[in-house]
Every structure is written in structure tokens, then in C-alpha cells.
Image (tube, rainbow, N blue to C red):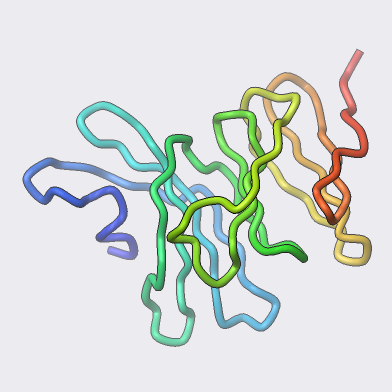
Length: 146
């Protein structure tokens, strides 16, 4: 089990976790993993850092939202989920939670795309909109279908 400690603090209560997204760092020594946890018919999520050399979770953080996509970016790790927020995390330690959060026009996001040259970020999800952010997380536009 890759994620034995995520969402399973009390061993007397059953819980299950699933992975929604994985991204590997450019140097291929780390992977960020995002997903969900179900405990007693309530759902939450998690972000975890996996050390690729020793194949172990180095840090993790349980979230209120289910994490649906994670991606490495120039400022750390970006994640989106079912709460309409873009969260930014420290790329070396996620245990303190998100360092920044930015509102999306969509209530739930499923996809992050990052231009490797410009670091422009596009996020898509429910509601038919795409939010675009600069590498400094300034929202440059929201594209909506008409």
C-alpha cells in the first residue's frame, strides 16, 4: 500500500484512499501524489510527496477537498480539486499545507496544463470555463463557452 498513513490515523476505523493524479519533478527524484480519502462515508483529500529513490512518502497533508490534479510548476506544486481553488504548495514539504490559494471561476477543477517555456498555467473543470494564470499566479483571463 503506497499511502498507508494518509487518512488512516485511527486504525479502528476503516478508510480507503485513491490516487487521482501524479507528477514527477524535473530531476525525477520526487513525485507529488494527489487524491482522495473516504472515512465513515465522508470524503476528503490529500497531497503527498514521494521520494523516488527510497520509494517512501516523505511528507503529506490531508485536505478538505478531494485533490483531482497536481503538477510541478516554477513556484512549487500546483493542485486543484472539488472546491474551486488553485492551491500552491512548497515543493519540498507539503506538511504545512498550501502556501497560497487562488479562486477559480469553476466550482470544481480537473486539469492543470503548464507551458514549459512561459510557465503560463491553464486550469479547466466543471462549468465550461478555463482560467489562465501567469507564472506568478496572477489570473490573466477566464475563458468561457458562450
